[in-house]
Structure formats: C-alpha cells, structure tokens
Image (cartoon, rainbow, N blue to C red; front, top):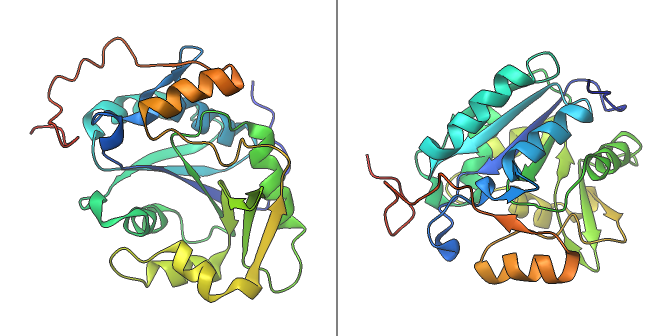
Length: 237
C-alpha cells in the first residue's frame, strides 16, 4: 500500500522520456534497471508515493519499448495515481518541445506541476517530497522552485499555472530554462547537500561512474536486444 505524503492540492507530474539516447548507443535510458526495476518505473512509483494525482510520461524515440512499461503501471497504480503517456512527434526539437507536449496532456485544473527526468537513478521519493514542500512554503512572488547542488540546478522542479501557461505559449526549442533566465527574481533555489537531484545517465561512462562513486549498478534489460532500433536511436516502423 502507498502512503501519500502532504503535497499541494491537485499536483501533477511530467516525466521526460522522449530522447534518443544517442550517446548511450541509441538505447532507451529510462529502461536501465536498478535492482531489477526500470528507472521509469522507479520514478512513477515515487510520484505515486508522494501523492501526485496524475502523471504524464512524454515519449518520442523508443516509444514501442517504453510504452508497455507505462501501460503496466497504469493498471498497477490505478488506485493511487492517474498515469498516461503523450507522444512528442518531434522529440529532437529539444526539452522545451517535450515539456509542452506533457503540459498540454495534463488536466487544466492542476495547481502545481512537478517535472523530472526519466534517467535519474539516485532520486528518491523523499527528494520529490522536499521539492514539493519547498513549493508549498515558497515566498510570495515565487513561480518556480529548483533544487541546487553545488551551484548546479537539478530535477525535479515545481511550478504553477503562470509558468505553465508561459511555456505552453513558447515555440520550437524554447522552454523552462528560457523562462527561468528571464524571470530570475521569481525563482526560488532549494539548496540540497547531495547529488541525487543532479545525477542522470547520458553515456556508458556515466553508468560505470555511478557504480564506482555511489555503489549503484544499472543494467540493461535482457529483452532489449536492439532489434528494430536504428543507429540514430529511432525505432524502425
């Protein structure tokens, strides 16, 4: 049984999982397994645990591989969180493009949106809860909360309707980073004393370093044999 923690009313989440993983040999990084569990599943279960009411997984490249995992969790977590996925038909346009796809797929009445990455192997539900707590207790005028470790911004981030509307109105590769730079006075940094918010996996070197630095091993699933995955990371249709 899942025991939700206190979160702002009507909080939704977006998991960014549309990338090709070209630096990882064109493989879906979100399906790397930690302790036998795909990273995308770890993220969704953590979101359900902190009480997020709905989550959208943004897919693009590797949809055929990732969607079955999401579909399984739709059923398993149906009583705790509404899960769906949305397809970015142009995932190479950048994270702003994928974020807009996710935002448009979320319910319009949400009061807050949490955005995280599918390939964060160290992130725990307590980290998500800490960012949500910072959002709930934010100072007046703050529209975005970002965790910061040793000067580096990380994920998840949380924002409300004003930022959501602004990002949806952008075009091309523009997105949350652009809004943040233009509205620094409306951003609240959450200083953290660990790297869980900032560590993600982009290369095989990162995977090896993760095991050496943090003792966390990531393995590719046995059924991911590369069949149907082109050299550019796009699944053949």
